[in-house]
Length: 191
Length: 191
DNA sequence: TTCAAAAGTTGAGTGGTTGCACTTTTGAAC
DNA sequence: GTTCAAAAGTGCAACCACTCAACTTTTGAA
Image (cartoon, rainbow over the protein chains, first blue to last red):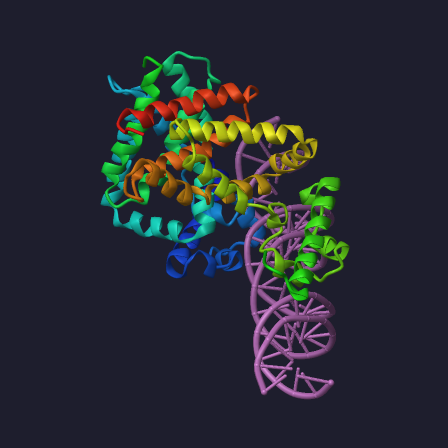
């Protein structure tokens, strides 16, 4: 739709080449074994330019983000007859299945899991969605937007992902963890 | 009980003077406005020595830690007739009340809340208790130590603290949030 | 054609953190 | 008491992520 001028295209191109260089080097030798200087050199830009495009070294790894939030909200919004916790459970399970196909994603995810700084950064980015999710839940449940239980459910659901992820049988884990949330949620709230 | 030799006493003393200098300067001018160099100078030690006692600048602020975990576990262990979630709720509420008395703690807590780096570090330290708490819960509930629901409940309870903390009426918030956990927990588990 | 904003560069600097080589202290064994 | 090795502490240089200020180049649009 939107025609991008030469300027914007070049900018995106620079950003992309930085991102590409970074992910390649990180996957080759590990996050901590590569300096920003080397990434900048590989992408043929200055370090200053690199930091004009990405706010931190960790940000070089997490390039997406925007789609996740809307997917999360959408999962709650059009959930058919299911309860909100169950809709979120299905969303996570399905997302995990989708990733399981691409082996490239496995490698990427191992990089994140094995690097404390990345784990943390990723988790922080992930929990940024709490407010948006809480608002969506509140709206669907027909309660005030700042309801505590909605905030709690949103936070718990987001945290549940990590709890589930480190289990062998993730699908079963998802059932149990979200089962807990569902019963608690259903107890004094009609959804 | 344990007689400390002159050596250990001196070491603790050095550590203490570093910690004291740090907290004093931080409270006076803010975390980001004080450099480690200045702290070291104030405590009359070298920067290298400072980092031999504390692993990072943030660690200078969180000096306790050990008592929290045992208190958490104890709250679950000897909970009388209450359910585990309710015991945790009471523990948090009581801890909050205890802190509310000392105005010194308010200032300290504002420092943490207002400094992103400290917020994050504090949260990371806090969630380190997840495993210990999960094990205690599992043992009390009579299920295998690596039960997913126990891990989830532990994680959720720890996260609940932050959710509750940023509300105006914390006691009411605690009731609602832990009420959610309690109903979910009670649903398919007799405690 | 002109102009101002945006992209990029360079280089110097900050601040936390580590490694190394060195001195001093101290607990304990002889 | 002397001796010795480990532990505590020092000073310095360096690394790394990140920032700032001043400057050049590019480019979209008036």
